[in-house]
Image 1 (cartoon, rainbow, N blue to C red):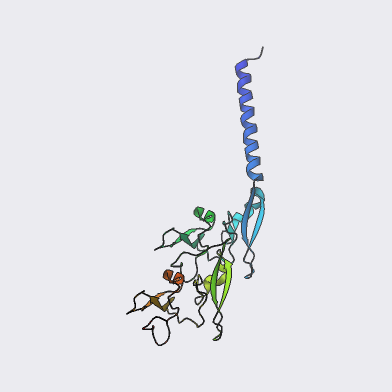
Image 2: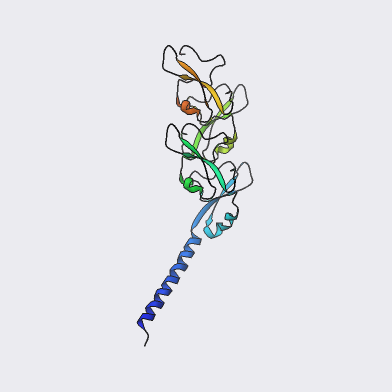
Length: 238
């Protein structure tokens, strides 16, 4: 006669083996997506979808593999990867300090890939000093053209990678609320001079030097003059 205890033990063991096999199969068949480097400057990353088992070989490429794909899609400019780490701008939600520049692992992005307001990677000239107005993963910037008659083109680019404009020191990120300047900004060490409207009748403008990235929030000030005129700020309100 069979021992009921032994039969129960064998049944439990079989169930455990079947459960482990099933979970393993699920793990390797689960759909996933990665950003794989293409070597093409125009489209540096390609989003590839497959099972985890199919994508596991990409993990051997630490400098060109992003998993999971960031919330706003693959970067539109090549990442600068150093020992498996990249620099990003983490959105803080603070008006006075809207971004923290931090280094995170390129794989997993330390969870920042799920943050739609983070900037991945950080622009070459540093994180913006004012919060970006993001719509469907895109922002509006002023692209410097080197033309004296039309020094800036107002364009909309992806927040992730900024379509390569993060490496352009003379671009204005984001574009001011009144549109792009009609004269070229004179920037030094990533800073420009503007006329800040004070609201005072006796002293309507104060000349200040601010970061070109984010304009220290002055891009949202309709009465500020960006850049300051060559002859200095007006002594009366226009």
